[in-house]
Image 1 (spheres, rainbow, N blue to C red):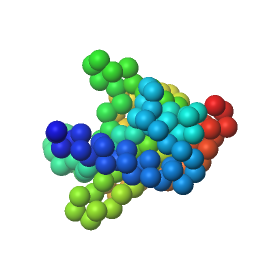
Image 2: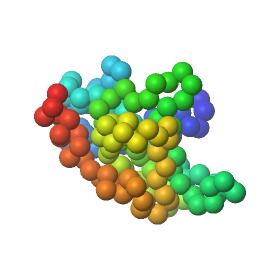
Image 3: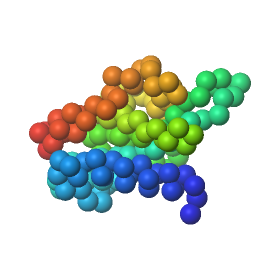
Length: 134
């Protein structure tokens, strides 16, 4: 299995463990996870990118849309940032409509966790809101 698949599975397990404190979690029907058999949750996991000329600062990059994939399949996206050096984990819980409204194909979160998506760090209430709407 490719390393990126292992990293993705680790992120899914971490999110599932966190959510099991609230309600039962199963494999999703259209996304990665399903909470309380009501809310689908897409989980994306990344390690920091290497700096380049085009992108001089390290970021966590999450591919939302690419050839053959039509974007998010759930009302909630959880981006899991894994730092393999410090072993720190940060989560960003973002409503799908925020990403769809941006028109972005990738979500980029700066290594220092600031920027556009900072307000969504540990925003687990997004999932509670989605549960109320389901």
